[in-house]
Image (cartoon, rainbow over all chains, first blue to last red; front, top):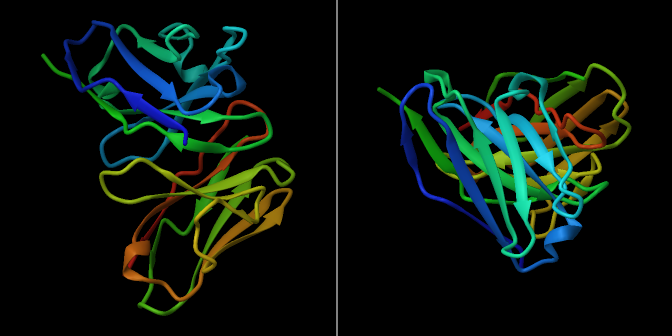
Length: 118
Length: 105
């Protein structure tokens, strides 16, 4: 049974960076993309980007270009999302989820709350 | 491609049916998924391929559509169906979500 377990909540100052991790288990890590989704308080789901753990290649939503980096470590079956130059409106829950080509996001992490506050 | 959902909020009595709509600004063929999110929880996959129920999803959830027009129907609404429902295109990136429809009793 596929499981994605994310790192714990973070509190960061404006301008700082945050790294959120997503450890996968129960399936072949390199066979699925890992996607990242942001959800601001009381708002909808916002697709941020994806990484192919097999190749290391990543694609990012235009809105996050230049501020986000997604990586994956196949030795630990863990994906990472780094977001830098944090702003107050980056306060959100960040989710990782897996996707196999031609199929949707069928397993999600529990979410990681990142609070940007001075 | 923009995914537009309607209505924003849907109030339904228990046992009645609810129909949610999702429109794509360009054709996405049948590559649309629907997710349910209840308060404090991660989204859960309900429907993919526009009309295929995911594993373990009750038969009262059904999806239809192709191209640019899609719908999700919840027949005989139950109290545990309260939440926000999102459509998403997943054929190519960016994998855009709709803005969500809140279903309330």
